[in-house]
Length: 185
Image (tube, rainbow, N blue to C red; front, side):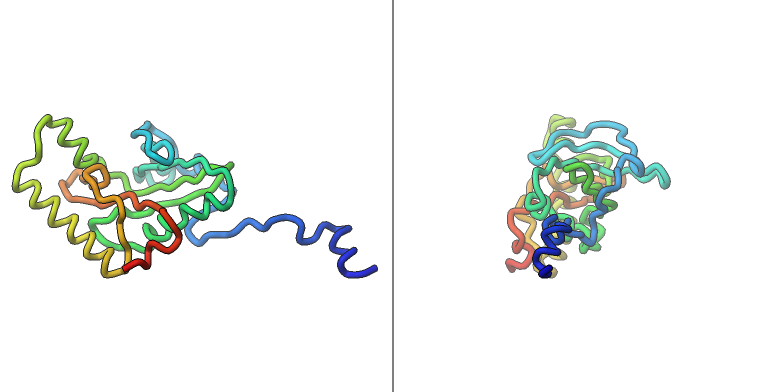
């Protein structure tokens, strides 16, 4: 019996291997670790929930994205890798990531103050000049860090600039447009 017949009989190599990703846990149910405690909204790529870690009680924004294929999952790895590699006080931190039952869960630091645009709508007025100075300064510090690391944000807008309860700014939402945008600069 030839080696090729042996492979055929035992179906060796016929199954597609699942690619492993450094920052994504596969085949673990995220709801065993995180409790969904509310819905924050609908994003362009899926729903966003408020979640709490069952062990540490840390709060997170959980972006849950329905993916149809491994190739589609691969597209989101850029955003996850960028978030995992960033260490700056004005950029949201990646807390966890899971791929379970065709859903990608990206859990990031929860910014309880909300997005700049939502705050202005809630206040029914624009920010004051001194508030704008703080927002601009901290946003520029985050952008400077990203650019120093050859990362382009690509979706800078008030809805992606988040407030902490302390009034600090966190830049969030990195759009995974292609696998090479991180190195454009």
